Image (cartoon, rainbow, N blue to C red):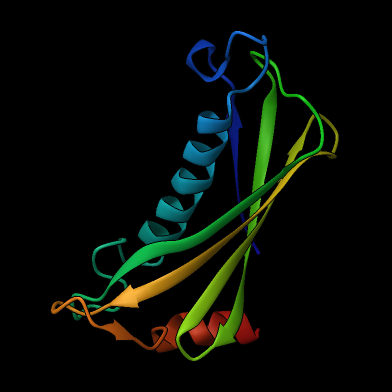
Length: 129
């Protein structure tokens, strides 16, 4: 499992005075990007061969409101659905572990010719634990 912590800024807050749904998506994305960078890769090259990733599916389940200045923790783990499909399971907590949201992002991987290819081996290995 990989995790990052963030403090909500004023730009994350909507007219309802809580975290905007786009802010949540940005934090999920930022966590994925940081994970890849720490692993030596990027979204446009996840295997050193130019294979990129695209989001094929996104689901969010909101559980608690998050407010300006609060610290949130975004936890992410990998689940291999098939040789061609990788799912990222997210849990967003606030304060002392209160679950604020759960999310699922299913990824597909494309070669330089935009053809769908198998999940890179290093990600398959991480997902299998």
